[in-house]
Image 1: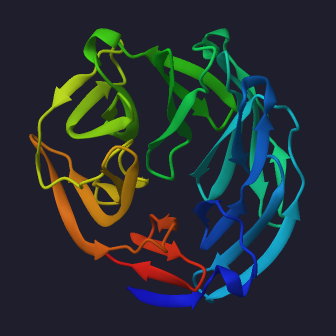
Image 2: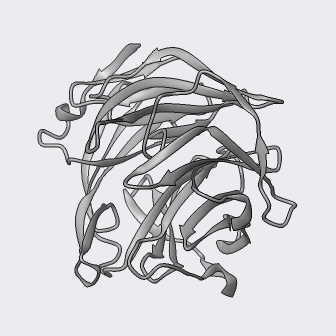
Length: 322
């Protein structure tokens, strides 16, 4: 672990409680999340599209810039957001969240003007998925190489649906629905794309979610929605709930997992700062890294080009090698 810069409080004396953190072209961007009420559904969440501030840390110079205030993109109540980085550009998908999953708009972050710019957007009719009336859609990004021209994500909303965004055209389409007979007693919570397959880890929903680190399945993208069990061995992380808080695909083809929470008793949890990697093969293998993160490292970013993990706390920016 090496300190590479001063912490978040050096640029924002009163940081937001939560941030979305991404690495784009040599800089770590932190988007402050603000609370958006969902009165119709007796709910609320913290999102970036509601407006707030953004700051950036240059990993080469070790300096901060900002904060910059950004206006809200939408004041609609029933919306969620998905961040993703491809080809050194940050993108944001807005979608309808309750009653059905429906893509609504696509944006690209302009690093010069520090603003979101609307991107050409279209979708096929099958991209709309009806779901549970009382719960928001569970939308999760599938980890992939950052140079890919497509983005894959999945939606747990009644069924599990696999989606793809073509970034050249801005078209959103649904690739398939996962066969429920093959994923009984659980739902996918983490995904990674490798060798024309999407690998999923699952969690079982009871009083809380319970992540199953030994339950790995692979979905061939050329298939019809039937995932196949994958044997996995080794020492898994002792995370509970929905598993690893931060995941990423590494240049060597391994799937990185960093930090999580472990259930304590019926209603409590404790932070676990372990870092692990999944080595794909027959069988796949969990391997624990010597790197350990601290609870203060709640904002994490990953640079694929250098295989470096960064953590941003109130007091320091630090980099971690595997």
